[in-house]
Image (tube, rainbow, N blue to C red; front, side):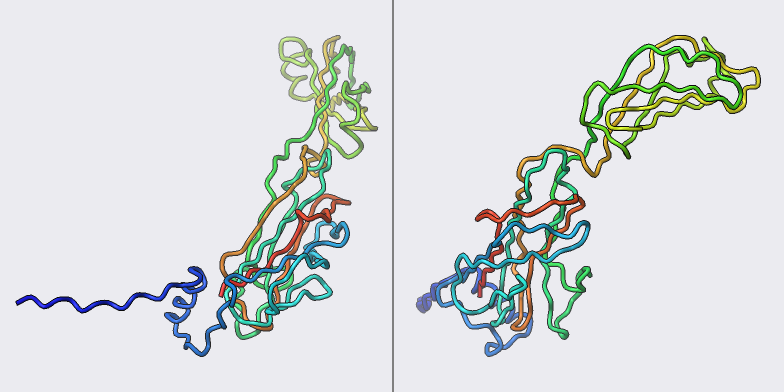
Length: 301
């Protein structure tokens, strides 16, 4: 005889899926019910903070972003400190978000910028998943993507170097066709159409040293040096080609280098501190103070 299955008690409806699942996960790791963080009364609690002024980080150094403006804050589970860091008062599950809006700069490559989120752990809870300049946990880190091809400028024209005795140097100086691209400290290359085995011979081609040097803005000096051929080398009239390019650290094109970064859901304890950092390899670079640039704290449970 079949017996009817007893009615099942209805499952309690979870008010917040992420927070409830996280509490179960923590319980599975051996935490007691009394040790769990108090539930968020209104679901996810959030706070968002911004910059009071444009921020220029120290060149090629990891800098703490000095958040100072409170856009909103729900609850009192954390506090914005005077140095821009966030002090957590209530242990729980958190997600941290930063949005960094670097200034648009012509001639600045954006992959030379870094954004990150770090956490100063309590001594007993330090994991050091990856050490940072501040010896804190790296919760999230990103190289702001971009391309870094150098800009180039060229010259092409006639040049008759003539005879070059052993130990001698002949030179010519040219002005690049595109102004404003190349300056002192940049690089250049040169060639001459008559430097070939058929014209001056293999011995001369092998011995001849061709150099190009940026000597002034938009100016390149081409040098031919004969170090070893005792009879001398004669390079007849031909076309000299020059390519000069700026250094990679100050090249490329970009609009606003806006990047949003967030951590996974992290267990953060009362007394721990979270903060945003940036680094730039571009001198005089800065982060813009606007509502698109912020740090947001979210407590999930």
